[in-house]
Structure formats: C-alpha cells, structure tokens
Image: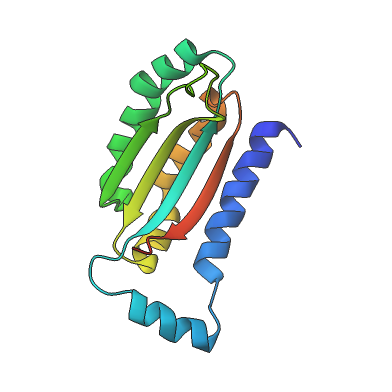
Length: 143
C-alpha cells in the first residue's frame, strides 16, 4: 500500500473508531458528568518537521487552510487553533513543526463532522504537503 493510502486508511479507521466506540458504563457516567456545557471535543493534528518548511507554509496558506475554510461549516467545527512551534533555546527545531487543534461542542458533533465528505477531503490533503509526516489524535478537553 502506498504511503498516502496508508494515512488515509488510518484517518478512516480513526473516524470509524470514534463513531463506533462506546465507553464502559462507569466511564459513561463520568463522561456525562464531564460533558457539561462548554466541554469541547477535539481532533489534533501534529505535523512533524517538513522536508521544506517554505514549501509547507506556502501550501498550508494557499491550499490547505482555504480547503478547510470551505468545508468548516459542513464539518461543524466551533473553534480552530493553528500553532507553529519555535526552535528551542539552543536553536534546534522543535520535534513538532505545527499543530492544528479543531474543536466541537460534543462528541456526537465531532463524530458527525469527521464523517462528512468535507472532513475526508481535508484529511486526504494532509499527505500532499506534510512531507515530514503527521499524527492525528482524538480527545476531550478536561479543564
């Protein structure tokens, strides 16, 4: 299987896992208590250092962010934070180059958003420019 196809398969598996996972009864009651108004569910994309940072930034600004923006309403994201990490004090590049943190108000909204054609288009674009690789994490804000 080619590398981009492996990543798409990983994203599809994550989306399927999120849609089908059911916590144990004790976890459900804890989740219900924690799922008060304002609780946010998240998808975090961690981008490793790209092979060419200038090419990454050009594509990210001109192609990927507009692609995401064109699908944001369909995906249902309530908040998106994009971070570019600075070199360490000794000048070495950070192990993670960028982070995209996408938020929803409920797990159901996140799972529904991840199942959309728009989310799949945005996720499918990641291997095009993330030449250093990336990691996708699903989570819940806990503070």
